[in-house]
Length: 204
Image (tube, rainbow, N blue to C red; front, side):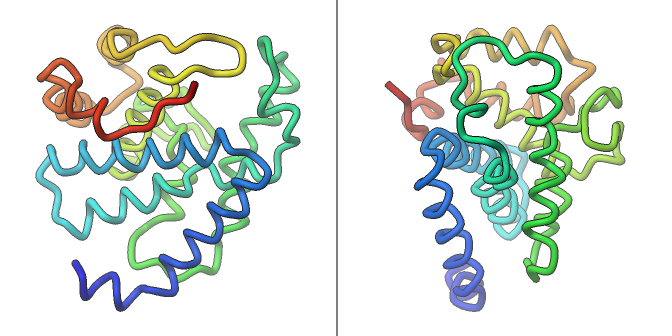
């Protein structure tokens, strides 16, 4: 893995600089991306993916919301529920990410993972309404990691919901998430969530 990092030093620097640019505009998203990357790595390791595959999912997590750079800041930090038009605009961030990342020669399918992380197993997600195996594995992992961090951390419009709420989400809405990914996630938190809690950062 060390040799792989050296071979792709420019890409790692690029990802770091993307995060720094976003931090100047939206610290919440940068914090969220960090946590999603950490959670996705834990899930990938639990699924016994190769170190190369795990690193690809981690990197994708680090920039999965890069498209939000094109969304008005006041909308991202809005207190209160989004209306239909606002939510429609927010959903364009996946496509915006594709536009930003196209042309970068990543050694992993980063573009697919980032573009598809809001797709759902039953086809109810966006932007393309993909279903099942049409969604790449990395995106299926990011989907669970993404909802996990979104629920265990506070949002502008609500308090943190906690780990039990995440477990309730993925067990109640099984049709939305990959069953193997959910099984791996449940093993990650089988210690009561200690390993997960220790790994992520919490907003105040």
